[in-house]
Length: 130
Image (tube, helix red, strand yellow):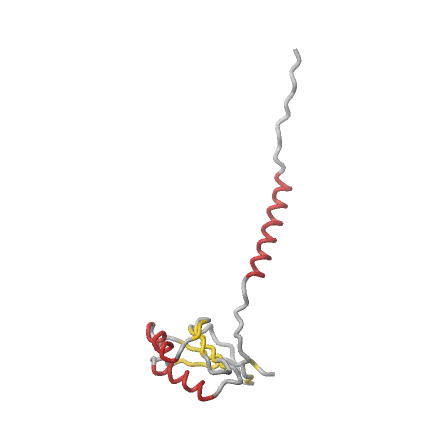
């Protein structure tokens, strides 16, 4: 009688680690490219005294045609006041990113709507000019 010697199978872990690392890097790179940039779709005016501020709680975008955006949706001034009143308006910091072609009167109306809602901290977004 002859007995066959059976070898135990081995799981090679080093190639498996290499593959897992490659997959991890691949998915990280794909995820980074899938996240959209959060830039403002307006041409901001330039300012020589522009300063970096902490991340504002509310960003309003005023377009050149006078339309207003809040949280990526068009909004009227009346609806804006209602939205701003829901939280604590005195603690809310609003930054208005107005297109440099926007009408000054439209900007003043947006600022008035913020003031009517009780907001006391209103800033204007600008890009720094060297």
